[in-house]
Length: 424
Image (cartoon, rainbow, N blue to C red; front, top):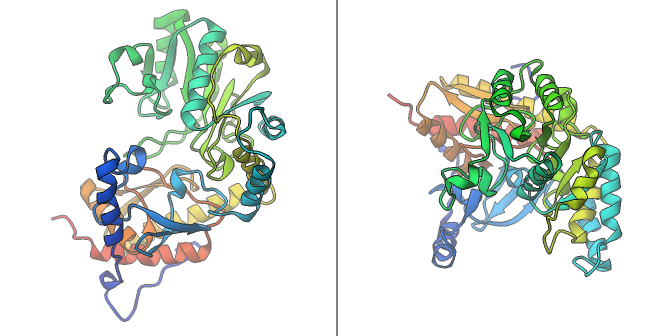
């Protein structure tokens, strides 16, 4: 195997006998939660609950967390992306404490807001201004409103299977959503610029914006990188037809390129939505955009009581500074590439084909040519042995992960494959 990190089987015992975790306290707390919280654990965290897996953490450090039963896990979900430098990062946490000593949520905005906006405009090449919210939905929702206000048009074009938050226009078919919520949303397949051009021809000057992630990372499906020329063609079609181009960089932001993921794929959007990793887990999102939209952005009313909280903004400045001190992007992707190669090799020794797709810092894993239940069974066996993975979502590497983490993960994966019952 042509990688620096290799795996070594446990020579003196069958791999399937590696110790597995007990999660009795987690299950008991989950039962309590169900009596006072709908579903016990709601939202996307609720979707990740597995019968034999952990439900609640007790503490975290670096790239690891411990559940309430005291079990330790190498975390490849990174809180679904926000953790990029490691849990409890000392520089980020000290920046938060320093801002809290000065003031956090106060009746005026903090100077740290201006400092963060200046930092983003300096770092992100497509940015001439910045606005702030608390989560990715805030950023994408505001971007769509600005696009509609700027163009006087109504329709949104999105990629089928893409995810841009929990706003009503994104929730077609979900409980509580009605057809009117998404009536103005048009959908095209990923990597199909011809389909986008056909939509433009069909709907004329009613399209306000095109919104997509830098590459396609849907749930329960392989991630797909953009085809050669795809983004350049999308950008050209938007420019020629007065359509605002919005990049949803909430998930991939700062793991593909520190100046915006678009830089890696050679195009320039009109607005970029950031979230997740921008403040290493502290609640913050940002929308940055081109000067041509600055006046319109100032006229669109979109706000929240906690939008101006200073501590997360201080965390973001510290996070961006730390990421620029070394080749953070290179480190995360190099570790991700080693993890991918190692897992593929381990799977092969057990007669499985593992597919690793997406950028290495955000890998999505799938076992090919077997029922999906087999894939989830392997994931469950990894989790039971202290490697936290999910079966339906892409994963995340951080700068806190180490080669020792990768090596241990490969040993766990080996044991987990040995414990999975092969389909007939």
